Image 1 (tube, rainbow, N blue to C red):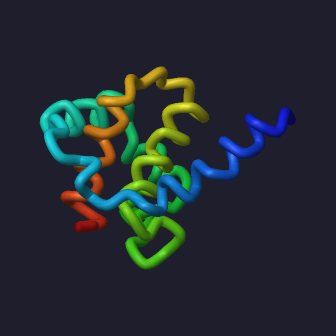
Image 2: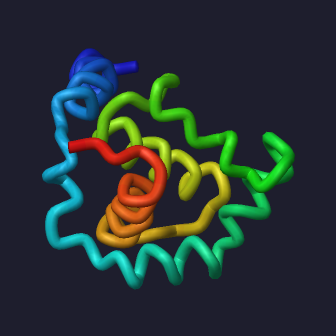
Amino acid sequence: MKPFLMACALSLPLLAQAQGADIFKGADLALGEKLIAENKCAQCHISKVGGDGSAIYRPQGRINNAGLLRGMVENCSTQLNLQLFPEEVTAIAAVLNRDHYKFK
């Protein structure tokens, strides 16, 4: 990997850690709810952790701030080839923050 790209890749986790829930300011919560339903997020989570799928949300686990939460939604989008726009990723993460994580 080229030095510049490596430096960028290494700094992304630091950026994510530095972000508070203000990254969700102005997010379209209705859009986030719609996208969660359309993309069957709960069904995927159920297949991964069982039960109602909510065990995947661990506020005290590895996702411990708003930036990391948004990054995890981005990761799901990439892994599942959902091709979500940045504002859609933010909308989904904002809903998850409201309902499960409650980062400030």
